[in-house]
Image 1 (cartoon, rainbow, N blue to C red):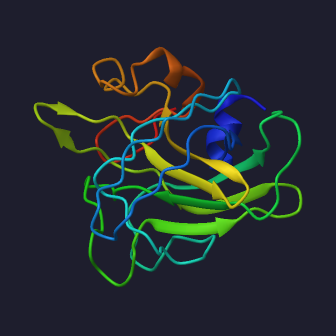
Image 2: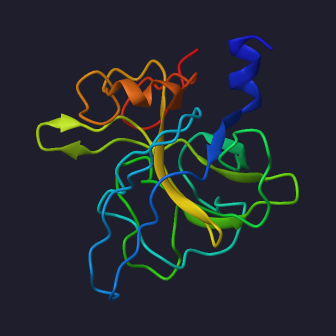
Length: 199
């Protein structure tokens, strides 16, 4: 499939997630969550949790709703054990991102642009959502990104983010520009801060 067909289908394979790393725990509900310390040698590396994580997102695969702005996209992936080949069932995969204007839904009961799902017997998960916009982080825009938090009772947690190739804000971003983030930069081009695709 060439890039135009890939973009027209609005489908992307997010990445193969492993469940290696350190389990992130907190002692009290009010305690701030630290960033992941995942150090696995598979394709998926850790990234920051960020300040906008909310627990208890709805269990759903379709995150779209009436009146939603943005380019719709399906995010698909698989979760593997630490051997990077054995699919792992019953893994909680949480994703969240901002809207096309760069705003996160931090307190509504709708949990917009937030969802969780459990991987199936093949380790697979899928979410239908939109490509997120961007927001200022100090004087720089953060590149468009989608957060992931992956957990299983018998494995260590992974906190990560995916980015999109061709995004000019990756170069100066302190997280997306790291060497370890290269495998998490996916081949979709965003032409502006609203999440619009450029072909």
